[in-house]
Length: 487
Image (cartoon, rainbow, N blue to C red; front, side):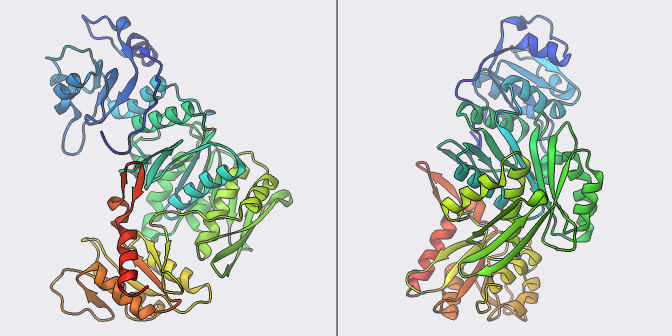
């Protein structure tokens, strides 16, 4: 079974004939659909369970119908597919229901089977080009401080009650997402933070879901990406999808989304001249960032977060504003943060701080290898009044390592790039073939009280669950490198 699949433990059965009636589907001849009970939905042959309807969808490389014999053996009670899939299913003994667009139907069928209720739990959808994962974690964390049971789904992991699984997609497929929400309802989660990717929007993964609040739509990408971002994310600003939105208007595309919205919108900005409904002010302090978010009707929340820089303050403010716009009083939010000492949320691979023993260097692990994202992280680390940080990048195969040389103006020494290419040297960079050696070199350079940014885009994929505990090889690599350097 895929590692990120979480299902309800006590799914109430639906009757297959009633499903056909609900969606106006033609019942296949020769089958007694009134006698068939449905307890789940799956579009992935690896995750089917007995009692499922298997939705066979055409993909880029394969059609789900290629796995029909396998899923029937696993106990599916019916197949929902397109005409091409039905041609491969003539030999099956289970009912085959034909529909022109099974992908479009997937989320709505899953909603019906799992009885998805927009009030149980209330969903907070987090979208944008940057900060989505952090804001999702901060929303769930803040609800915990308030005393509200919450679920979480991000590009890193899914969490329901005490169950944690590593994510394979930023946003699950529609069937998995409705199953996840159903499990949250079973354990009495009142709210859930759901990270929303662009692929989820273009791939109909949110079909059948209704969000209490969506936001903050923080945009930090090239102008060339703005049109596609706008076209996809305006889909969230529809009364059939969400009740209200929080939109960061520090970008033009954010301001355009406000104009396009068909639901109530609260605007957020760090620019005092923006006229936003909520204004964020921030200041670097030792050990993080303090911030104030001030809204209309004299609503104010002031606190701090143990991550550095402007983006950290904006992420924290976005979480606060989304919860406030969702109906919780700012006084309640302020009290929760005061009682618990502000935001100190470990978010794997998102400027994740790893401290050496004593007064040795600190390493900040981040998974975003885009040069503009690295620049923002370096500026955040430098913005606390510290010396310029050191940079180690372990780029993916697709990255052009020469681009990292442009970051030299923000680093204490030439950035170190881990590469197995045949290049002897690249102007403005130092090259290493081994990650441990690169980190040890940076640790010696940084010395006491120094800071190192380690960019590892593989960090999320390397993380695993072992006996219920998260094992992070990237963190272990950093700790070992610090220890081997004498820290």
